[in-house]
Length: 225
Image 1 (cartoon, rainbow, N blue to C red):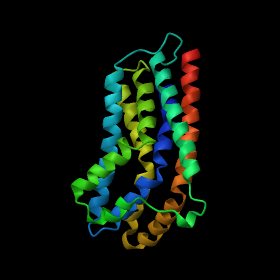
Image 2 (cartoon, rainbow, N blue to C red):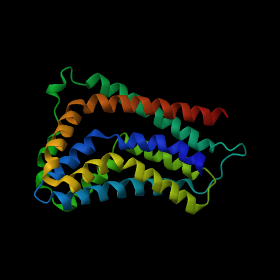
Image 3 (cartoon, one colour):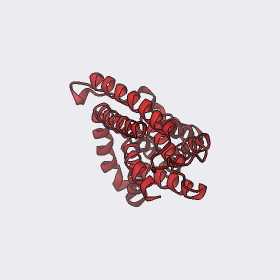
Image 4 (cartoon, helix red, strand yellow):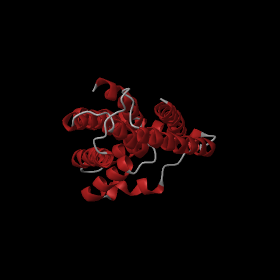
């Protein structure tokens, strides 16, 4: 199981660094029912990653790793395809980054978050986790590695759970700060939000490119082994 965790923890870290979902959560925490809405958002995030990972495990089945301990060939092909997609998205985002970060603008829908019901907040978190162009490929790649590892089902589920926990640390940090500090946290979270808003495009472009190259390398390694 240690080898599998080594393969997926880096991908989990890539999911954890997600500026836009963090900004969305900070806005949610600033609503009149911030404590409840923040918890709802976090649950939606965790459910989104867990369901996407579980579906990938189910589709992959319980195929054993190759005789040399390498993942199955389909995992290599999947990682190769996901890597190409992430690199292309990264290049596209980098070209679209604002020359002046002070002019960076958040998506228009973020201005309406403070009017969202708990159900809408839950669905928003699902989209930002399982439907995110960076998080979805990384989650699928991690679950595919787990699925083809040859581990018993129980250990596969445990590995996926560890992935989800690590991938959620980026959101859990502002949530914990808010729950512990309450009103005193507003200034700190506001600064985090401002920084993330200004640098979101550049950060995402770099993450797309870096993790895309990682998946490309992993895919090629599996296919040629």
